[in-house]
Image (cartoon, rainbow, N blue to C red):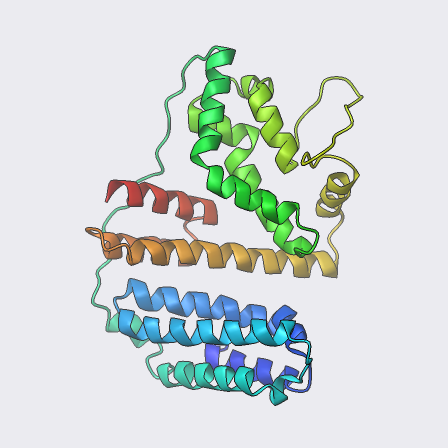
Length: 307
């Protein structure tokens, strides 16, 4: 496996004659992002926060420089954009200097992993009347209003890349899908969620798949997103595997991984009792493939509530 400094050097060499926007969208830059997320998390959960802060600071400077260069009307080549090249060079030198640590990061760790991690909390199932469930679903949405608005702003923005929308749509299914809501509220029959007018409005707004009675459907207007656009997007997700789809899925998996590692870092840096020990144990299980992204994130949420 190539090291982070090798990835940075390779990306700069491949795109030094190109545009910053091409570098930002490239597979090479996605690899840099993924490797950075891994290195930063590895440093933090092992107690090397001072080193991690320096890496993070220079990585953010590189991201900012790349963003400015990609949106600049000057359209300079990467090698001719001094601010971008300087930020990239500084980041490269820092991570290259860290390379000597290698496998000693764990050996020099000041943190011992927790012996056990809590399981994500399960809500006991209960009987609901439909009006009670409608009210509960409304409150469920209200408790997640900020994230709901963020998702909607991404899905309704025509300038957001489709791969980003696909990632947000997956998150919307995990958070507001019928079965997710039924599990979160302890609903015995998920069918009751399907029959809830409150949930139907949420599903239509976010473009979540749901079964319909009959074959006809009402035309949808305003911010409701089911229709030809969503049908086309859903069809693309269900299309046979191609090189293009494989590349898009790989990028999505990297973004999922970045998000999960960011949540683990948040736990480690929360300053709460046993946070570092729990974060290290969680990180090790996640890296070993013993936990999925969803399981890792749910565990972080439980730990942040309990610690």
